[in-house]
Image (tube, rainbow, N blue to C red; front, side):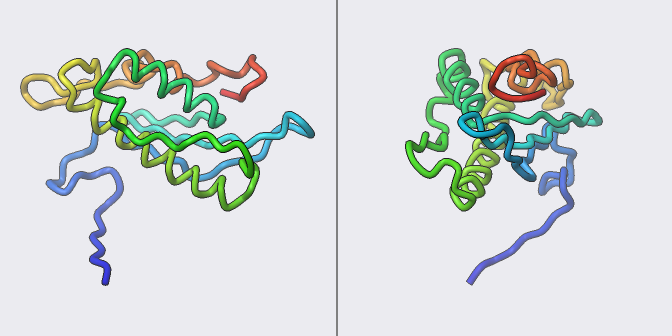
Length: 154
């Protein structure tokens, strides 16, 4: 028996606008042969700003490792494990998409309330978040950051 609760996207249960909304609606297969890989579409919305980046799993891992060093409270977050085999299997990629989306949502939940976070609410409980602040927090969220490497696009 499941209890389902629905609410409009982007609002919290008390009706307030969520400062950051993040989703991974899909993934795409890129490259050819040995360089064939999946990239996940990450949609980020900060207040009225909305943008999309495509990232490989390896970029998520790099971000997680670097942020864990800077913000120890993130070490407790569950990060999808690396797979040695089957990482091009459609079912595995779909499951990884779900896990990465859950990870990003938890990342922002922790960082929006952490006292050491540059993203947390001010003393009045208000958020002064901007796209710039999120991109400064981690280059992972910057559009175009990885477009010139062999690992992905902006």
